[in-house]
Amino acid sequence: MSITVTAAVVREPHADLVIEELQLDDLRHNEVRVRMVASGVCHTDAIVRDQVYPTPLPAVLGHEGAGIVEAVGDSVRTVEPGDHVLLAAAYCGHCARCRAGQMAYCENLFAADFGGRRPDGSTALSKDGEVISSHFFGQSSFSTHANVVEESVIKVDDDVPLEIMAPLGCGIQTGAGSILNQLKPGLNSSLVVIGTGAVGSGAIMAGRVAGCSRVIAVDIHPSRLDLARELGATDTINTRESDLTEEIMRLTGGVGADYVLDTTARPELLRQAADALALRGTLALVGAAKPGTEVSFEIGLSLVKGWTFTTIVQGSSVPQVFIPKLVELWKEGRFPIDKLVRSYALEDINQGFADSASGEVVKPVVAF
Image 1 (cartoon, rainbow, N blue to C red):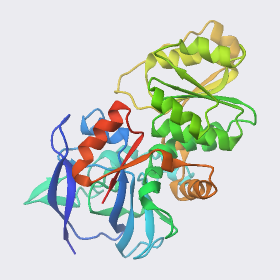
Image 2 (cartoon, one colour; image 1 turned 60 degrees about the vertical axis):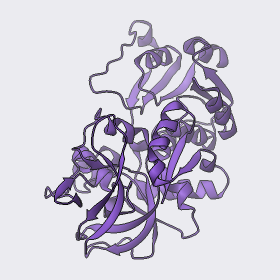
Image 3 (tube, one colour; image 1 turned 90 degrees about the horizontal axis):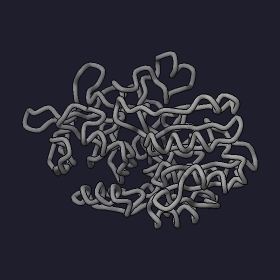
Image 4 (cartoon, rainbow, N blue to C red; image 1 turned 180 degrees about the vertical axis):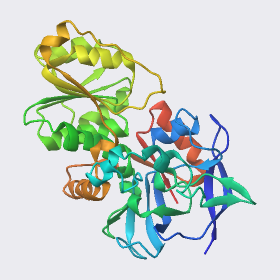
């Protein structure tokens, strides 16, 4: 049955989200109705709010949801009412990439995550007959309740604190998965992480789990660099004070970095990082840039280094497999994501966006 929900709605690019009462329609056969307990605020929410990556407006965003299942559609088999769940990105489940277990590279990713509609063109949300885009990343979790596609749902134990674990759905999973699923650094290798927001912090923690002997955190905010050391960084570089290439080379004894993960998508930093790679090193990009952004690399001297440039989506994760592993690492005290989180009420969500943008907070979490 349809219900009334309270949600944060994006109506205009670059404008504050507006708290409104909306109608959530009937559950479909492949959907799970989730009462939200918490939802992380991610950089992707901000760039979609500003229409760098477009979703039809007005829309309810939010894609790091966590909550409790209230009802399930007829075809849902993985969860049942009462289950505690985390929510991650949607994927179609039937394309060649999904069938190969590469859900992060789903051929229908943009439609599933940014389209604002179900496959039949309908939305789950409306207000007095006005259509509101729903199913952002399969969920639209900036709402007290959501109809979520089953592919976005990950069951967790009832004792897992949902307010802390919600950010695993996107940002932290992306950073950690980039290291553990994709780059897979060898023991005693060197890792540089550019940008120490939620994605970078996840990568730093994963670098220590993987056994990297040197984990170098790069940022412009001293407070974030201090936190990076708490999370496991062995060294830090403030690019307002030092040249990135020179510092990486100094810290690695002139050898260069085995792996660099960039979360900023700033072309000048990518170029400097490439110049500081070791022989056979890898530079990986997870940061989201405005479409059309380009970066140039030197190719003469680079040729003999045999280095690799790669892009990574969602940490190359299968969320239902990888996220429970991160929860277990947290339980073991090896993945302290609670150090990143600050809670906000739904009516204060715009302050959460602002604090994230300024660098004051690594991971704002809306607590319902």
